[in-house]
Picture 1 (cartoon, rainbow, N blue to C red):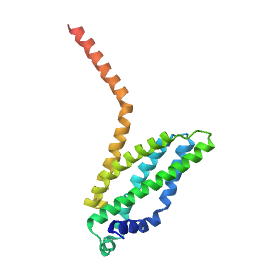
Picture 2 (cartoon, helix red, strand yellow):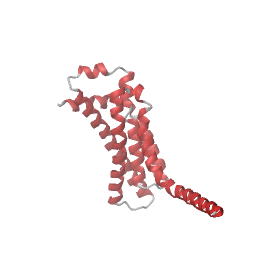
Picture 3 (spheres, rainbow, N blue to C red):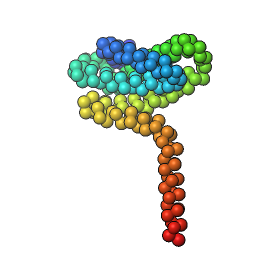
Picture 4 (tube, helix red, strand yellow):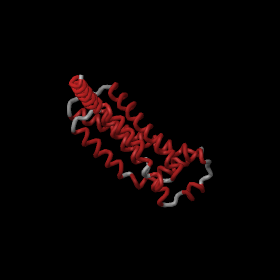
Length: 192
């Protein structure tokens, strides 16, 4: 067995006690599903949730001083990093499958049609969100450790939220700018 697979397996065993978190993911997805959300929104919500949970392995590692355990497994640092990324991707993929299964249930219950293009869009958007957040967050945890990186790890979540929220503010912002330009033009005409 290669080194990164050993680390992935070790991470799976380490996080076995955290399986209750997946129930909370199912509850969140069910809540959004009952509100009639699209599969894309459900997938993004699942990706967001799993990206948030992916830091738990670092917290458990630091809290239980598992660095000695990882040191006892004869693998290189590169394998440890790759194994952690594989573990995170497996979490994402399992949650994506769970979201799709729940969506099929809701679609059947609500007599809605399920389109493959919607599922592909949901996978693409959710994978973009997940990979962006974990791509920024995980190197911070590897570099600083969980305790020191808690605040910095929130940066990708805030950045993604800002990117999602900006389109909603653009019309309002353009209205404010237009109002100010009109007010300034009227004031400038009054002085002429």
